[in-house]
Image 1 (cartoon, rainbow, N blue to C red):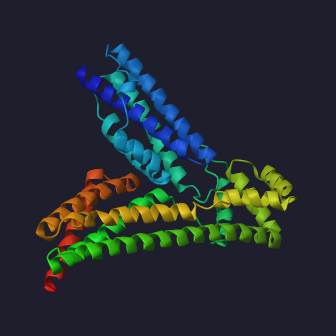
Image 2 (image 1 turned 90 degrees about the vertical axis):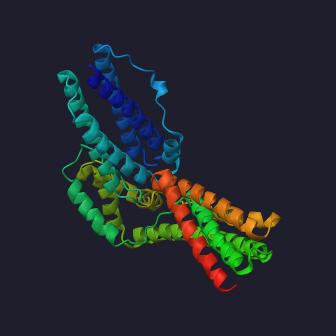
Image 3 (image 1 turned 120 degrees about the vertical axis):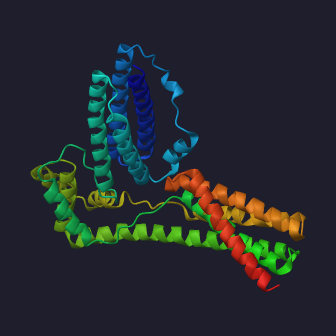
Length: 389
């Protein structure tokens, strides 16, 4: 029964890959409840795999070594680096496509079709679970467990939203790795434009080297100082947020106590128990501050280190910016212009592909898009340079 066998093997590989992705995302998730949900979903994928293996055994289909199914290096990098919510959204889309394509079409074997139909139902519940996680409060608030909806949750969420709606000072930060890639992108594009423009005006003379190095240094310093100031501002905002929460507790203790009770209710506690716990915590303002800071802000620490961010942005921008200049260190004239164009467009493709680690787009499509942007920048600035020649 080759049709059923092929579908079972395809589904079997898909379950292993999905479980591995959920485990990687769970390892990065800082919210314990969300991490637990993801690990349960990974365990469910393992359960599906076992059922598929049992059916394959009944049909006499050899079960391959699970170790032979590996995530691609690119997908593994994305799972480790891309924003968690973006990964979850992409995983949900993949689950939906897999359900529609793999589990709905008949195989010609009734028992196999029944098994795939059962797994399809579970996969759809995974999609719902991911959607619930994506819809949960993003600022560190509790994540509802899929499938369990206490009767007070809707009312509690509405009341909590009204309170948090008056507290618009909550902010969140971002990591420096993506900033480094975008820094390389900016440096490369900006200095490539300088190099091609000056080359068009001077025919690739030694002035290109001077202009390129100056542009690279200026871009690197600008990005470094900008990243430092931005990150320090986030730290200052985070500290201000904590102090604002402290003032809210001092000035509006009853409202803040209700807010904490609502957070407890969203975790599944009934209102009476949640009120009692909140009242107990309210007796110690510092303890209450820690709890509310954790729930509303995801903790009191901001995203990162200003010096680390400055170094990452400055170095990455400098590295990207110096690439178009390198040929002019050794050569001048038309040969240097051609070599600068080649190495710069190759670098554009590499940077574009690296961006897909965070955008989750196809690496080759992202790289090609960046390359075309480089062609546009280079062509326009070179033409402008020729006009001033």
